Image (cartoon, rainbow, N blue to C red; front, side):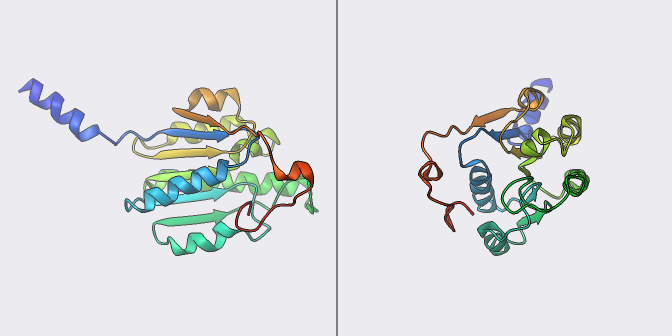
Length: 190
């Protein structure tokens, strides 16, 4: 009887342990990898929520395409755009306030137990910029239900986050068109 119980528990737990996945590095493709995972998961009728910490002030492709994946995929763009670069005119305090709001929304979504995957897009970058404390991210990882896959994107992933993750992929830039003056392309970069 004990053997049957153990085998039953093993069978019932297959696929139930959610992973902490980190896509980091200076190469292109971190958000794209997370979106690819979301697309795959929607194909298996999974529920996904993506919370974007930095992006938000510009229109980019996933803002429109994500609507085609509803109700399985929910995109929440919280950020005010890229911090301190390009056309950013927002005071730093505003970026900090918005990033803290994104942490609060993330906590609510994680605790709701409504999702199979939650993607915290550009959260590593938000930590690196000092908009979010690394301990806030570690707390989000700690409260994650055991069945939830939590995906953290953005370059500059801290050692603490890397150590807390189950899977870490570092994107490495080998060659980029920006190096020769080619600007971002619609549908490729945004």
